[in-house]
Amino acid sequence: MNGSDVGASKMVLFPRGFAQPVFSNGPKMAFVLEGTGTAGIVVPNGNGVLNERVVRISEADVIAVPSGVVTWWFNDNRDTHLAIVFLGQQRLVNFYLAGPRGVFKGFSAEVVSTSLQLGEAVAALLDSQTTHGGIVKLGPELNMPQPNIINRDGLVFNSFTAVLGEGDSSGDAFFLNSTNLPLLNEVGWGASIIQLGSGCIYPPTYACATKFQIILVFSGSGNVEVVGPNGDSIINAAVEKGHLFIVPDTSVLSATAGHIGLSWLSIFNSPTPRFLTLAGRGSVLKSLSQAVVQAAFNVTPPMERMIRFPGQSH
Image (cartoon, rainbow, N blue to C red; front, side):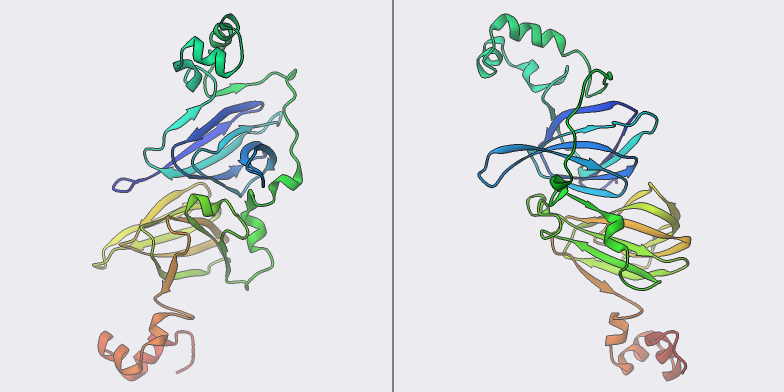
C-alpha cells in the first residue's frame, strides 16, 4: 500500500487467545476472515453512558470501529484459530489499557492510585503484574463474558447475509451505510460487498468521490485487473480468499470470478462513493450517442453496435 495513507494488519488468535482492550487515534474497520469468537465493544448508550456490548463474531463479519472506541477480542474455541483483518490509517496508533505498553504504565503511582481509587501500594502491585503483551492465552479458570445476539444489531454486519437471495446468477452488490451499520457515520467511510457467480465478470468500473478503495477478498477466487489513466496495466493477478489490495482514485477496476465464484469487501474513504461503469448494463458506453462512439473508437456502425450492446444480435 505504498503511496497511500492506508494501512492493514492481520491478527490471529489461537484457542483461548485474548487481545487486550485497546483504542486507536483513528477509525478502522474490522473484518473476520476466518473462525468464530467473541468481541467486546465499548460504546455510549442512548444516554451517553459507556456500555460494553459483547457480541458473537464469525467469518465475514464487518465491524466499524470509530476513533476512541475500546475493543477486545477473544477466541473461545478449543482447536480452531480466529483471524481478523483491520483496515485503517497507515500510521494508526493503538493505546492499550493494560500490559507492558498500557497507558497506565506511564503515569505516576499517585495518578494511578487516585484515578483508580487504589492505595499506592496496591497500584504499585498492579503495575508489577502487567507484564504480558497485547495478546495472551487465558486459562480455563477465567470465564469470559458471554455474547448476546441482540448486541449485534447496529454493530456487526455479516457479508454473507448481504448477498444471499439477491440479484441473479451473475452476481450481487450490497452497500453498507448508516442504516445497516450505524457506526459507519462516525468512521466516515463507506463499504460495499460484491459477489460474482462462477465465471462472471465485474465490468471496468471507476469509483468516484473517494481517494481509494481497499479490496479484501473473503470468498472464492478469480482474476483482477487495475488500469491507470494512460491505459497502463497496474495489476493483473490471480486472487483468492485473504488477498488484499488497494485501488487508488487514478485507476479503474475489473474482476473475473473463477469456477467457485468471487466475493470481496470494498472499503472507501467516503461514506457516499459513486460508481461509473464503463461497459455493460447501465454503462456510460450505452449512454453515449451512436455517432460519438463511432467517432471515438473509429469503427463502422455495425462495430459500434457491438461495442454499445455486447451480446445482442446485430
